[in-house]
Length: 403
Image 1 (tube, rainbow, N blue to C red):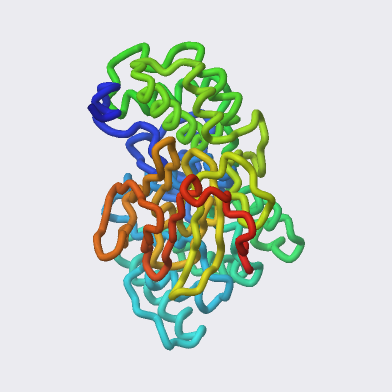
Image 2 (cartoon, rainbow, N blue to C red):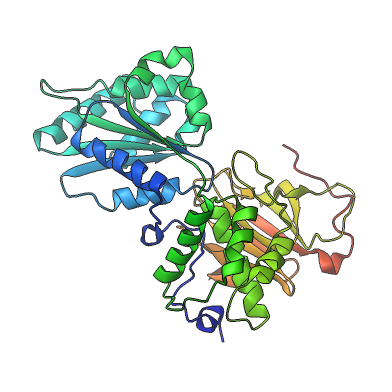
């Protein structure tokens, strides 16, 4: 019997991949959604949405995009390049152009003509920049200039900036005073409170097909909130692991004991947060050997070792986003590409609906129990798996991340 059958669920309730169907509308998320929707009605000014890592910004944006009518044309730029010319190219690519080998002035002309053409057709054009905290001040100034494109009636380009809390700090720079003056609405998404955390868990279980009232015992919600801090991604990680713990014990109800077992497996500490989020921190190989490290991952590209990391039991994510435990800077790797789950009987790799897939050798896999020495291929990058229970030395003495 699978875990889903055991709990009578139709799909995984706590997966990390953003899914608009699972959106829980807390007061903060509902307000942010209303601000985003206002850009459709009003063309003047920016809307800025910031939030902690794992607070649900990406899911919120996907829900917003999923409601667009045919009269809306949009470009979604994530992890925008730091050079203005590359930034303009990225926007034009999203609009269907091939703007390569063009000078900056030609790129601006292409974009101006496109926007005017769309306006003449009665279309509304929206530019959404995700992970906007990574934008350089030069690119942000380019964004301000784009916002000035207008017809004789109104501004043409509607702009949304979404990013982590550092975005707020960037916008406070005196050199960006003119851009800040254009900001019409600003919203910050924080963590959920204890009641919202419970409602969030119950909502996701219901969407996943749960029809029981006791799948999560009443005493389990408090430790989930205490150790996740109300951060949605961390709630998902902890609840998913707690379900596995309960399943392993044959329990049909997840109780506080199962949650604490999950906390121990994840090696989390109570209320230890960084930038509002708690994550399992990968331990570089080369430190003194400690008990508990079960998995070693060597990250390679074309045979060259980029980093070597060790992990204890629990779940870690692999992807292009910098907040993944294993972050890989590559256009062939999705934002959250895959997850590795280290458990009592080994380590499992699972594809999280990535664009380019996960391969073991020449075979594409959705979920695979790894064997010592397996090579996982993600685009041009390889992850070499070592089971430290077999090697017996915890990886001590290995070379750590060179860069």
